[in-house]
Length: 148
Image 1 (cartoon, one colour):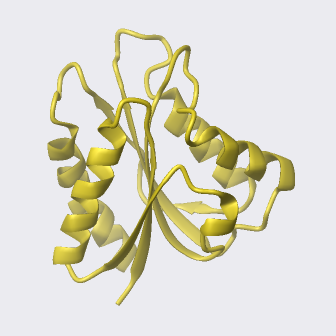
Image 2 (image 1 turned 180 degrees about the vertical axis):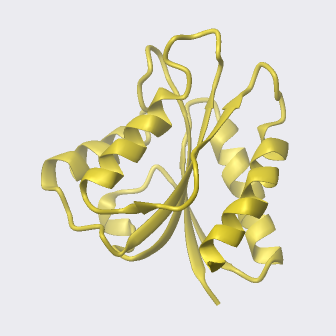
């Protein structure tokens, strides 16, 4: 059974709801999950599969609960070449910085060797007020990519 670590970066709770929903879906599919909301680097495995869901805050910034993690990765540059990950961004297209947080996370992880599984999903919450639905559709394809 594959274990997936789900990480949420959230200001108002939307990303946390998406992570909890996806954890349930993954459990139904037979995966073991660990859910972390704004973890420290020491809490994360340096191998395996991560699924990150993050909203974008302010002018394209990370949510406060993910800033320390990403800053620590940038500073310490850990070897994460044994980590594979997926990413989902929540935002609103009327802003120039739509889903910028997940793009920043993606760039940061790739610089330390982590390998992205499939494409990033960017959800416009003004068009999809229940982002869990879009995320669940994307998850089906992402699971296929994990198993290939």
